[in-house]
Image (cartoon, rainbow, N blue to C red; front, side, top):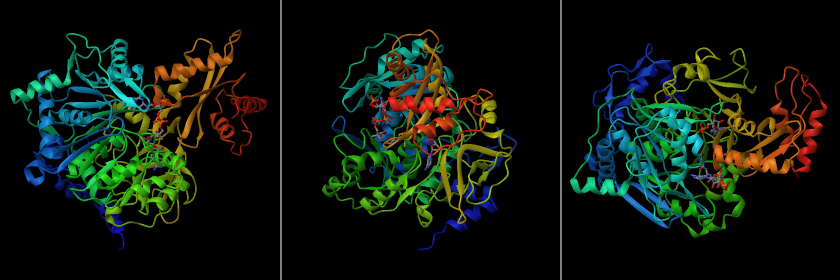
Length: 633
Ligand code: COA
Ligand code: AMP
């Protein structure tokens, strides 16, 4: 079947407002939009400026009212605890309405922020939707971040309430959340009034009287009293959530998502991109702490009336490399979404996919990959192993939904390994040089997107329009800067090759090397430092730190290296995967003092490199090579 993509993309390009007005008919508005886009509002305009709605109503209540009350909405599958739970749309709606009533009782109303610091349990999904129900703005913080990172987010979002659990479960260890949370509140200037904590059987957290409350006790009491909160009317342009993501400094960016545009875009993508039907099972194996979790564990599938899965486990080791196959088979998954690193991990553990033989993936049609560049070897292995189309697609926390993809629902385009395929409607993607001039097909350049961004993309950064302009809009006037580099081929397929800033991608997790450098530099013995993302077979990239010690320090370098590794884990968190620091005498710099991180990366990756013309002292690269060799790298 020929793909309808070309026609649909042209329709959008000819009249974007008519296109999104049409897509918006899939949403149940309280006050439908009479205006589709307001160019004069916000940083670059606002979608659906006069509409009102409620995201939770669209994700739950409308399905309950229209025949899906008994359909499974959410499956919680947790190989790390050996438990499973299923919620129908009706049950999930009631759980959400109950928690929303509790939040209300603790003073949370429209526009108030609530931070979630939660593992992958069903209550995390319930909490997000409960906030949406009463118009509160949630901000989920990934469990792998340490106290200091959490404190930064508390100070920026200023939450009234924090929702948390006693622990997360990583293979072989329990991660106690409460000491991290208490530490973060201690560090933060802003003090939340209330903490509501889910005690898990694996860990009993200590509670602080007058501030901390037991989740189950509160919700049980609300259930006994029949307390349930109704959906609150919010403006389509009101924030649904803030999600912090790595910027080029240690201070994360608070990406804002609105209610109306977000619903319209996700609903459109479920059908036209992912090609699933309401009632089918859609599984995104990520974490609610990331944008993939927000868009495609929670909101996308539920807005669409599909069944979502909250998976608490890993692709390997919980208990083995067959877990993904078990989930797909057992829950009749139609489409799955994960990061290529997960498939690299499975392939390494079970190269011949012997564990797959135990399962029948009869309903499984498509695997979607994103979060990092999908290397062709992993794609080919997945294709051969699963016998279904493997679809790479590219997007960012900021964009909220995919920019470039192979739109399965509109009809699959020929797959080219290494390319996430073509821009979706909404996205006018260009490859340009430093002067904003388009480059020729096949030539590398910076990838930018013509404004306005479509519904679902960030309208701004939390209470910081100026940083929004500065970070994304000022360098290429009239365009949004993605900070990714790549090229387009003569068929119009795009290739995303890497970042143009200091962000690295570690196991699909986005991290700032600048943030890590700030931590290394805070060690009393460190004079200078540089962190690069070195090639890593499993995680794609792994951070590698170089430190120069202050004059006169005669402590053992190996000891200081271990200390800085521990410091990054303590300040940023285990998710940084910062395991290696190398002491060197000097860092290679240009004559104007800029550290030549790009060449250091090539040396660490053992890629061919040439001596930069601007180098201050060429001998330093030899010293770097020597230091890496001594480390066995
Ligand atoms: N809470 C606390 N700690 C966490 C955590 C969480 N929610 N998530 C990860 N960590 C810890 C890990 O335990 C690990 O700690 P360690 O250094 O003590 O081993 C560290 O953070 C790094 O985690 P990760 O990068 O996930 O590496 P891993 O070795 O545990 O697992 C993979 C490697 C490939 C199996 C894993 O990254 C994975 O499952 N990826 C799937 C793709 C994915 O979820 N991508 C997200 C974006 S789509
Ligand atoms: P995040 O905001 O965490 O989703 O990370 C977004 C970044 O991950 C992008 O800017 C890219 O650098 C990278 N990325 C995501 N998906 C892909 C992909 N399919 N191919 C290449 N890089 C990707």
